[in-house]
Length: 197
Image (cartoon, rainbow, N blue to C red; front, side, top):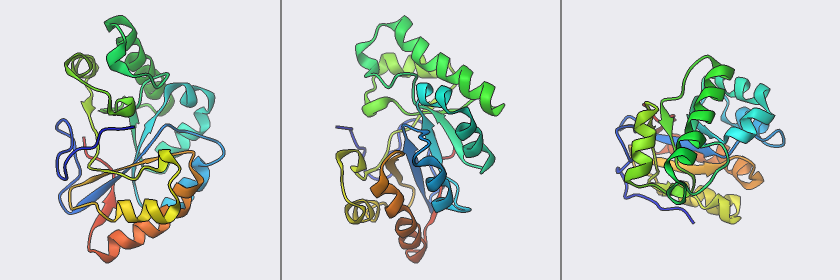
């Protein structure tokens, strides 16, 4: 479904510090799972790439994510395949989400993740025009495909220093996996954290 990168090959200029593994969560916020995900992360910061329609429907959750110290990135308004859109539609997807997230948090996002990892030169142009850095991933946990918590933990365990782990809000198995992922990374001497813009 989504296109991975080789380890250490975070798209664009953004990436984690080399002694960290960036934990990223796409598609939220969801009232059914976001509060539990924030609790599971505890004091560990992560990056949340938020879906504009969901953010508009749940502004208090967007503010809660920001208040907990997490990085918030742009994940478009309707989650389309951006390479299939004409320029005005593509620009609107990104700009509308930027404007809403800035209004809700007081800070304009600097990170962007294209839905499905669907990107190319035209998408890069849109992203750059909004002052954003595109971020893909090095490890896809495939939680979107219905993987179990054990499978998600195993996939995240493949992350190397400087890697970026793709996960999704709205997945109960992901919630179950997060505390185990945090423990496993710590045991390996790695620091889970957000993507750095």
